[in-house]
Length: 286
Ligand code: GDP
Ligand code: MG
Image (cartoon, rainbow, N blue to C red; front, top):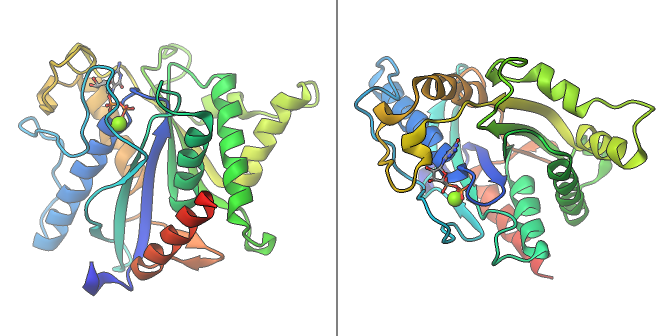
């Protein structure tokens, strides 16, 4: 990391309820980024998620014991060159599942708020649908983050990119898998006839995030969902799931699609990030 201290960073976080495939999802990002890094350094074509590939990285497993505690950064930044030739350090962040039996509401809120502040892309992982209570929790958590942050108002919106990731999406007759712009618009629409609390949640998200996106993912196949049987072999994934992941990951982070983490209007470098992380972790303690 030392020689890269002045490189700008991109931080991708995945947050949401416990045991819903967050860590599993991050392994696709890891696979993509390492494959891309390798292809770029050899000046070769990018190949990833091939038939013989085995995923690994963030620990995922079946069962109910808690695996990821608090906030978890992948051990090293992965260096990626953008289409303009600039290098970026990409960091992946896994978080503790909210609302498991061992975590208080306050802890959930802290993990979610802190990961939203630190990241440039916050992926909010939900299952089936975007339910009203998931939106309610989300808005409380980011409101809390906003309060702790105390960013002056003249630097624009406090947070960057929010991505709803809907797992095992079932309404594929009405909405196609993949980028769910229409679906999201329908969920987040604001109108005068809505009860205040429904409207306020939506207004707050639009006010706090520069960009909000949505991905609707199919079920990954029984080998992934069934207890213990998945060992990371890409050929065991349902083909449609694999195809959607192959589109989604580069849409969120690819050489033509790289936006640095910004704080108070300035791009964050590796050097700054360490300082920044410490500062915010401290302000949550106090
Ligand atoms: P986390 O607690 O949210 O990080 O969840 P994990 O990534 O540890 O995954 C929990 C379990 O769900 C594992 O057994 C995974 O194989 C399984 N899983 C992962 N992704 C999906 C998905 O999209 N749908 C279903 N039904 N199961 C999944
Ligand atoms: Mg996990």
